[in-house]
Length: 327
Ligand SMILES: [Fe+2]
Image (cartoon, rainbow, N blue to C red):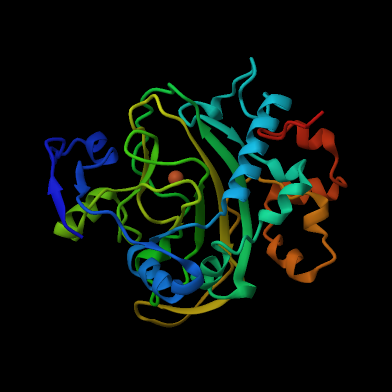
């Protein structure tokens, strides 16, 4: 990928500059893959770059359904979205977020393993039996949200990612579906391709050299981005006026898998740990009659363990951050 240096480039040693990127933007867009016919190529691209873009991951009727859910739930449950008078700290600088819609909306279960991206999720995490659910939420940057200036960061990582061999399958994967059109005027997801095995963004910048490129992901509604949570990424704000809606789902790797560390022949990677200490799984999914779905929902955090022991007590949930009970 070719890159150009822009005036924002700064290597002064100021860690804040590094955290907000080096201003070296990609000059070409990454490829968009059609999963139905290009799964193998898409997986290969993901394994090399730590992300991949999938085109037409959602059909127009599905986009209508999900956008209608946004409209309806924002009207019916403004506090769950952070739209009410009780705007919460974890919503600041993130726009709006409906953190745990699965708890109250069984109609969303149909989206959990959506065929538009799920074959790639399975391949990235090591096969059908290796995918575990971690998180599902909806987010919106409303119109005129201004400039949030999110820093480049990675999400959850395991320290062994820097030295294990083979690297894959990765520890967690996230899918972001664009539910509205995304371009340079709207907020957009932005990645540094190939940065998933660096301790800092500066390490990636200095080691990748000419290959270092801060790469915005644009695309029409229905486009999906699948990324390894270890890759450096951020949200660009666009013009601060246009809005954007997205659906985010995180998945973890389950089971035990063989790898190796330097000077160690045998190294067994256990299942990835819980992604958060607050995401809850409703009873209908945690105790589903389908053993495959139970396995999919088998990564419980400590909050889930206590909630199950309390027989899914709504009062326990209501006392948690992001646990607001729908009326
Ligand atoms: Fe992130």
